[in-house]
Amino acid sequence: MARVTLLGTKGGPAIYPTENLRLPASSLLEMGAQAVVVDCGLGVTRGIVNAGHSLKSLSTIVITHLHSDHYLELGPLLHTAWTAGLQTPVAIWGPKGIDTYWQAFLTSMAFDINLRIEDEGRVDLASLVTIHELAEGEIMLGDLSMRSILNCHPPIEESYALRFSDGSKSIVLSGDTAPFQAFNAFADGADVLVHEAMMSEGVERLAARVGNGARLKEHLFASHTDASDVGRLAKDCQVQVLALNHLVPVDDTLITDETWTEAVRSAGYDGDLHIGQDGLVIDF
Image (cartoon, rainbow, N blue to C red; front, side):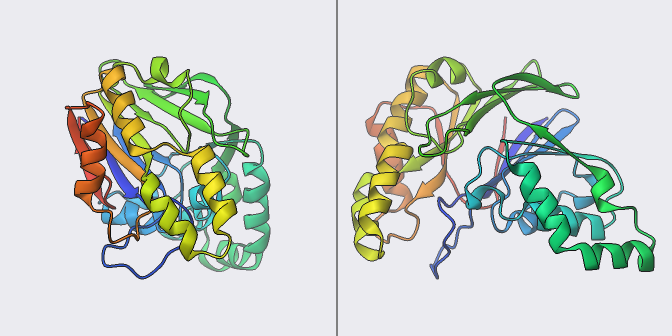
């Protein structure tokens, strides 16, 4: 059994009232005997529970890069899992600096953590968590292989795309990235590609709505991938299933699922296509 659940599909950290509210980036990958949480944007804890996955069984978390919408809820997720009965080790893989975040979170929650250890007889939360520095290359998570390559997400230099394989199935998660040459070979032949997507026409309107619009627009065009380019890439890599994720923007009423679909199809991709929705489950 292989399955990916898109827990949060919104690009960026801000949340505004919308009819179809999406929360920031996080995914749950289940392959073989492994369950891996990729990114921990706001809402990840509720998303995992809504997906029917026990917080007590958390074992592996991967953070692709240190933008807040990808790791803001890492500490609260682990703390909540701990209060729900987590007693087994959790490995966190992330870029340099994720250990600083974790130690600062433990410090900020020291009163509560120490109180619960003494008053409720819990194991020390810090003793359950091991931080590993993510780098380019391949590692084994049990019987699941995880390959990592640096993608293109300026100004952040350490941002990763991931490819998971159990020997028979493979899935690629792009992370936040602009198009870059090495990605085609990295994603080639994957059963599923989960790729961030931007609608350029919406970026212009987004920039007009926010106070720092010119700088924001510059960042988005330099650091993300237009949906049509995602479609072209998926076609070239011959992936069987494509899911658009980390959608930018998501609060533009002129951009619908049909708009995203048309952009991808116009680039020639004719495989199975999913437009990211929080809670979307893809079996493969």
